[in-house]
Length: 118
Length: 113
Image (cartoon, rainbow over all chains, first blue to last red; front, side, top):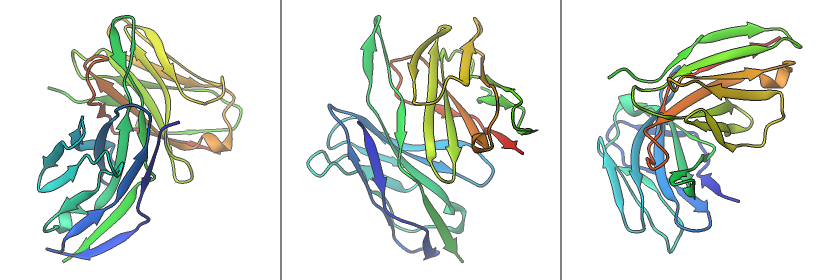
């Protein structure tokens, strides 16, 4: 089945440091890949996505590139802020076709807690 | 445009009771998915509804069920609650099956005592 593995956390950084959170996946076919972020007491927010190999997703200074050869989708940010402190989830969806529509379920990694200190 | 709303936000129940959680998707979204989030198991898919039909189901016991109404609002029900059902239950909506982006609500925090 499909699976997503994220680097162990928690990750603690100082403001303006460089961030990398590793994510690798196992899936048949061609999944779409996502990073979601969860702030304390809130639901998940889509941070960025990539739907095919070599696509780069980017948003709010965060980037991730869909690498099919290494089955990876690592999240990076050049200069983190205190406000980036949250839990980050890597996820994939493999879409199936049925009855003229496509659907799929998200498979998540275990999440990485990021804390940024001033 | 209003986001995904879930009610109630917090719930405390006793073992053996049943509970119903509600989710209102973003206007125009026809697909609703439910996920369970726990510290031990992380985020796990429960089921997905589209146009009032369950299209996809995760590996949860039959005590977990759901439905979707004609206005796309969805409910999930858990019967005979167990302590292990304590979790954050998240609902996500998407435009239709062809959309890869799911938008999440704030969740319902269920505590079973």
